[in-house]
Amino acid sequence: MKVRQLKKNKVNVITLGCAKNTYDSEVLMRQLQANSFEVEHQSEKDDASIVIINTCGFIDDSKQESIDTILQFTDAKKRGLVDKVYVTGCLSQRYKDDLETEIPEVDAYFGTREMARLLKTLNADYKKELLGERLLTTPMHYAYLKISEGCDRPCSFCAIPLMRGKHVSTPIEDLVKQAEFLVKIGTKEVILIAQDLTYYGLDIYGERKLAELLRQLSDVKGLEWIRLHYAFPTGFPMDVLDVMKERENICNYLDMPLQHASTKMLQSMRRGTTKEKTTKLIEEIKAKLPGIAIRTTLISGYPGETIEDHEEMKAWVNDMKFDRLGVFTYSHEENTHAFLLNDDVPQEEKRRRADDIMNMQSEQAWENNQKLVGQELKVIIDRHEGDLFYGRTEYDSPEVDNEVIIPFQKDIKVGDFVMVRITKADFYDLDAVLI
Image 1 (cartoon, rainbow, N blue to C red):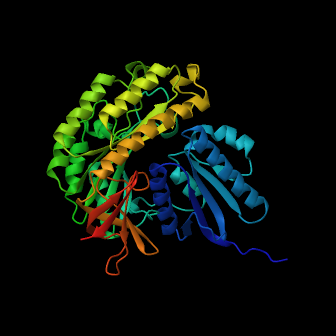
Image 2: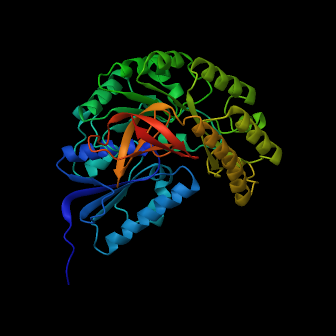
Image 3: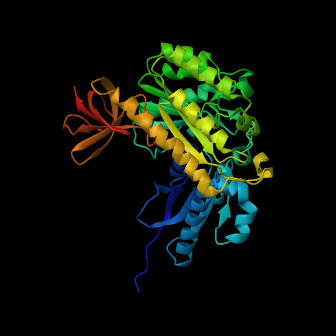
C-alpha cells in the first residue's frame, strides 16, 4: 500500500470570509515563513502535514462554509492525509467552546487576536521585526491594508464586536511602513479595510485621523491607487473628501455600507442616523467629488421590516442611483441586540426582497455603463486568460465590481496600467481597446 508522503514542515493555510481575514492569513504566513516553515495558501497538492483554517463567523452561510471546511480537513486527518489541523479566525473566536465539544478532532482552536499563541503551538516565535511584512495571496499588484481591528459601533444585527473586539487603530507610521514594504514587492494599489474606516484614530489620537492617514499614504512613492472600503456613514470625517480631491492617487471611489433607507429600520438597527441624514451625506459627497463611484450594501428582511419599508428602500435606491450595490438577507445572530427581536420575515421573502432591489439596481448599472462607451479610462490589468486581459478602472474594486475586457497584447503584462477606450458595455462588464 502506497503511503502519502507529507512534508513535516509544510503548512497549508485556508482562508474563508472577508478581506480582513485575507490580511490576517498573509501576516501569519510571513511569520511562519520566517520560522522556516514551507507555506502555501489553499494548496491543492495535499502534501502539507499541517493545515490552518482561518474561519468566518459573520452570517449563517459563512459559518456553515467554515464548519464544512473544518470537517473536510478533520476527515483528511483521520485518513492520514494531514497530521495536524488548527482553526483560527472569527468562528473560532465566537464558538470556541462549542467547537471543541462538537469537533474535538481539531488539534487546537485560536481566536482572532491569538496569532502569537498559534505560532507558539507550532514551536515558532512571533517576530515583531517583521512589521508590515506579508506573503500576499492576492495578485502582487494590489493588496489589502487593514488600518484598524475591531469595532465600537452598536449595530443591532452585527456580531463583529463579539469576534473582533473593540476598535484598535494601527498607528499611521506603522501603516506607512506597511505600504512602503508593499510597494517594494510590486504592489501598486492598496485597498484600505477595517470594520470601520470612519472611526480611525479616535482611540489613539483622540480625533478622527483618516484624512491625515490618506495624506501620508499618498506620499508613498510608487503607490498609484489608494481605495477606501467600509466607511461608516455616521460621523464620516468630511475632510477626507478634501484629501481625495487633491491627491491624484486616491481613487474616486468610496465603499459605504448604509444597510437601509427606512428611518424606522435604521433606528431599530441602531445605526445612529436617519434616512434624511443619510441622503444629505450622499448628496454632499457627490457635490464635493463629482463623478465619485459610491458602493453600498443593504440588508433585506430585518426583523419588523414591512412591505412598506422594503418599498421605501427600493424607491430610495432608485433615487440615489448608486454606482455599485449589494444586498444581504438578514441573518439572525445570537448574542446580538437584534436576536431579541422576532425574526418575522420568512427566508424566501427575504430573498425575494433582495432580488427585487438587485434587479432594479442592475438596470441602474446598465445605464451607468452605457455612459462609459466611447470614454478613455485608465485601467489596471488584473489577469490574463486566453487571448484576453481583464482589468479594472479606479471606479471598480477587485472581485465585487465591473471588469474591463481587453484584447491581449504581448508588450503588456498583469499589473500594468493602460489607457483604453470603452467600446461596449453590459450590466457588469466593459469591452475596451487599448489606446
